[in-house]
Image 1 (cartoon, rainbow, N blue to C red):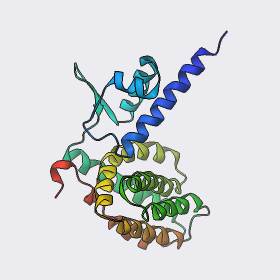
Image 2 (cartoon, rainbow, N blue to C red):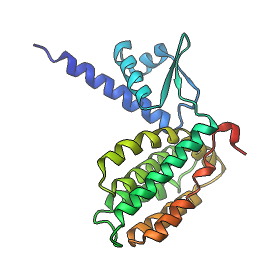
Image 3 (cartoon, rainbow, N blue to C red):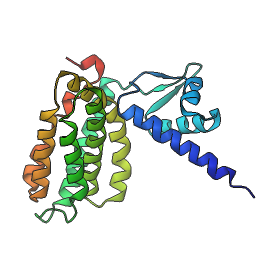
Image 4 (tube, rainbow, N blue to C red):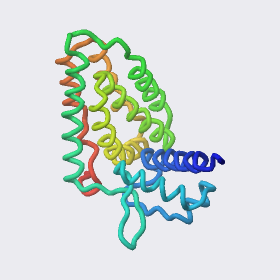
Length: 223
């Protein structure tokens, strides 16, 4: 038998990876329509793997299929954002308590530190590329933070929430990048990293509480 299914599967994975990257970086904006013909030409693929990729992204909460209107990047309401942020807060605080329960830093901080360094490097650049790199490193930092708890079911719950929030985080990071270097965002994450690295649960929870999540607002709430 031939290995055709494996080839098809790899095309789906590539399409998912590229589309998800463009959505989370802010290149594809919330509410933007995804036209199959345009995407198949850009990606050099047929419609079948593209449609499967869009289906999978729909399961992850990044795109939505509208009856008779096609597919678009998901657009969250202010209530959606508030609920997702409150869930993120609870899950990150739980992860911190699990990771720092014994009052000492986690054994492996390498992934968290690497993400912080990428954020710091991106902050020295400018424009759209800074925002894209910042958005990727930001997501890596928060995933690495929660993974310190060593709680697999927590990660399975947390990652879809962060993916949806990243839609608007990316948009805001691009807006901030247009105004100047994203220094304050890096400082917030540096303070959070330092608290975790010191094994200081109280300081970590304070930094999480003051992390500035509510500055990432849905468009109708943006100042």
